[in-house]
Each structure stands twice: as structure tokens, then as C-alpha cells.
Image 1: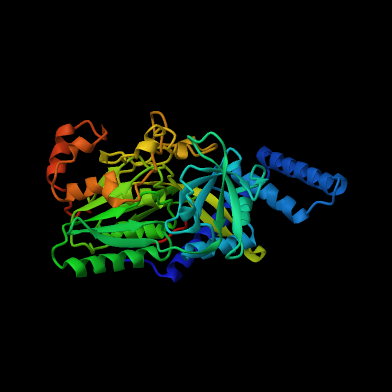
Image 2: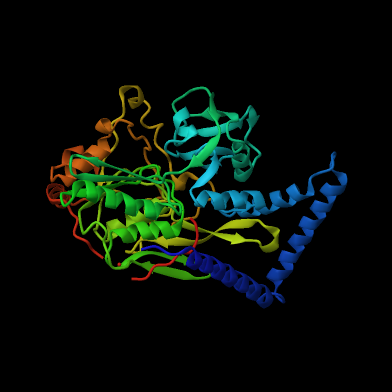
Length: 469
């Protein structure tokens, strides 16, 4: 069901080799052209500026930091997800994908010069301290974030276990910025949690896609089946506020519920790939509901899109974040660092691009907000990928871009509107009255699906890992 580390490493090395060969060929082919002359002139300009800064700046600059800033500036000008990883950050990223790292426990991006919280990770210091999706971090220990790169800001948020940090947060609906004190800790991501809901339904919460996700999912399904025996009514896969992670894990998770057919395809300038499911549905074809919201991004959207297109699962919640691009981590040899480069867009089995659009659920159901938050409902909505400056355009989208939605989830399961809707749906109850706005015009078809849970396994083949996204 999942790839071994050796195969993943080979695919990454092969991708790097292909990209390097393609770049070399392109430079040689253009060596006599005007474009190449222009490029060298611009590089000369950079050299002139670099020399002038080294010789004339009021204080002796850190030359290594100057070069890193120049490289990172080039990459971040491409899109919000491309960036430079110095050796330290590259090592941290590798630790993170293994599912254990030191820090606060938040997934972040950069927006308008400050750090934006995509989602706090469950059961981490940040989540416990009250950090919310959509928060803008404007200061770290009293010092402004503006002027820092995303990697620099993340590096400052990390530190020794037990040391405190004060983040200054700007939150929609709150007039003034406020401070949150967080004690750093080792973040051990338990990426999969499970329980029994409604008496006979397996509930599986996936918080991120790292190397521990697929093993955790398989264990969760086995535990649920052991507890309920042959009385499992269905499964709820909760991907709300899951910011994504490794592409191969998204493929494996999708594959877990499919027997055959395409899971996802990627199309880039250098190459295109397609991954298919392999025989073997670990749930035995039981009905599946996937919960999503505005904090569900990237790998979460791959899973949701694959299961939705194959009609293997019913999607309930609100529109997802809309990150439909793949980032390849390309090591820089002896230097020890790497670049995170957007190399492709990904597409669902039916060829849909999620970029700056997101996944629209089969049943759009909003979380019921507590009274104190109802007046701030609009402010609590995340704007998604479409709102990020410099984001890739959706090459399939003819209409207006738009992604993201509310990322609020009630902590009390009894008050969790979307979860309760999923339980009712799997029990064959009509949830049409809970739908805020029809996701599709065919109301009659929705009514039938609400009365009779969908769950017949649809379309699995070979599967491979490409790169983190």
C-alpha cells in the first residue's frame, strides 16, 4: 500500500537529475541567443550591486546572508510556496516530514510581509495557547516580523525546549493586536487519531501527511474493526484544518479506500506523472465520509478530490484552501541546503485543477458557531490560496477564482455540526435541512444520496512518490 524509503529517494534523485539535465540543455541551446545575453547582463548587474554593498555599506555585511537573501528573493517572487532552505532549515524540514520536530506546532505561510497561520497542529503548544487559523503574527518577542523571510521567521519561532516565546497576533474581529505566550516543546505529531462515533462508525482524524500517516491510518482501521467486529457502519475521515504534507502519503491514503483507477496526476514544464490505485480496499467497501473546511489544503485536497471523483466518498463541510501545486525539494549538493520549488500543478482523476479554487463539498454544511462568534462569522473565514499574493493561476478555471472558507471546528463533538451531519448521513438520515447552499443544482440527486449512503468502492494500479507538497 505504500512506498519504501528507497523508492522515494530514487524518485527524488531522478527528478533532480532530470531537472538539472533539462536546465543544462536549455542553457546550451540558448547560448547564442539574445535571451542568454540579457540574462548574463542581469547577472553582471547583480554582481555590481553585491560588490557595492560589500565595499560601501555602513557596516560590514554578512556576505552569506546577502547571498541567501538574494536567492530567497528570487524564489519567493515566483509564488508563495517556493523558497530557499539553508542547511539548517533543510535539516529541519527533513525532521518535520518524519513527524517529529521542535517548535510551537503551527503551519504557516507568508502574507503581505507577515506570518499567517494556516492551521495550528492539534495537541501542540500553539493550539493549547489559543492560536487560530487565519491569525497574522506581526511580532516575535516584540520584534517585527516584517522584513523577514518565512524561513527566517520560522527559525526564530523554533528554539530550545522549555524556552518561552511571545507572539503578537492580529486577528480578524479583534480590534487591537494581542500577545500570546507559548512555551516551546518537542512537537511529536500524532498525525492519525481515531475513535468510535454514533455507536458503529469509525472516526479517523488525520492532522497532517508525514511518514507516519499511512501506518497510522492502517492501525486506526484495524483497531476500529477489532472493536466493532463486523458491525462497522462506515468511516468518517476528518481532514479539516489539515494543511497537507507529503504527496506519497496523500496517494497512499487515497489508495486505502480505492480498488483501481487514477488517484492524482501532476503536470509540469519538465514532466508529467500519473499515479493509480492498487487492488485492496482496507475498509471492505464500507461507506466513507470525508470532512473538509477552509483549512484543508494540498494533500488533503488530493485525497478529497480522488475519493470524490471516484464517488468512493461523500464530502461534507466547506470549500477547501485551494493549494493545487506540487513543491519539489531539490538538494544543492555539497552546499547542504536545498530549494523548495513549485514544479507542477496536480489534477484530480477527472482532470480538475484545485489551484485557487479548492474542493467544493457534496454537502456544504457550515459549523454552527457559538453565540459569541456569530457576529464575527465573516471574519472567521479563511480566504485561501486565491488570496495569496503571487499565487499560481488556475489553468483550468474559466470563471472567477476563489477558495477557502471557515476553519472553525467545535471542540465539543456534540456541538460539531459537520461531524454530526456525517454521522447522520452514514446512519441513512436525511441531512438536506443542514445544507447551507447546494453544492450542485441537482437537488433531487442530493436527496437520494442523503437517504441512502454512498459507499460502493469505485475505482486501484501502481503508485509512486514524487516529492513533498
